[in-house]
Amino acid sequence: MIELKLIQDSELEAYFSQMYEQYRAELIEGGHSPEYADQAIADTRSETFLNNELLPGNYIFRAISQGEVVGNLWIHDDKPGAGGDWVIYDIETLEGYRGNGYGRKILSAAEAFVRE
Image (tube, rainbow, N blue to C red):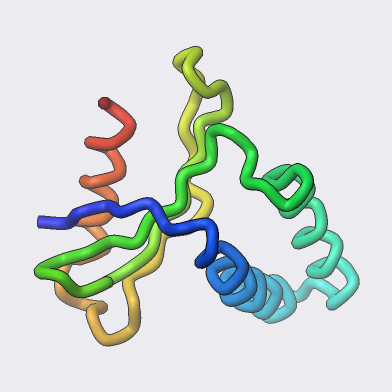
């Protein structure tokens, strides 16, 4: 069983700093230039924040199992409250918990959240 707990505003900077660092490395590893990676991050940030506040429709969770944080999830509703499409921007099982089915459980919890 996975519980999804919205992260606190005070945790957003650390979450995005780590996520953007990983995203940048993945883009460069995939053959893109550092400049392209930096622009992609800037574009994502402008689509996610306004005046340093998370825009409506973005939900960032810590995935918790038996009191332990086992992963993270960022989902987005493109039309909040209007039955829009949902997108998974980030789903991660933390390193020490990989290979134990937590990724599937986090995805199932996301599906349950979207249905609510």
